[in-house]
Image: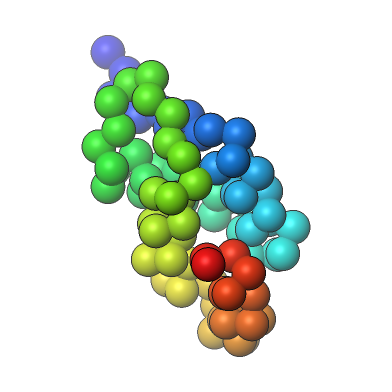
Length: 84
């Protein structure tokens, strides 16, 4: 039996994650970390797609933990665009 939780995203949520990548705040590994954390926190039932609102909320909680200190200043500048 597979205990790995899978997270599916709506188109809007996937585009928002792509935007975080384009801004340079996430790489492939940190995207994977974000999706795993989202599956754990949200307790998402299998087959449910998540929209951008829970993605933003979770990312706001975890981004400062996974981003190195020098890069946090850039994230602070981009914050209004990404999280409002």
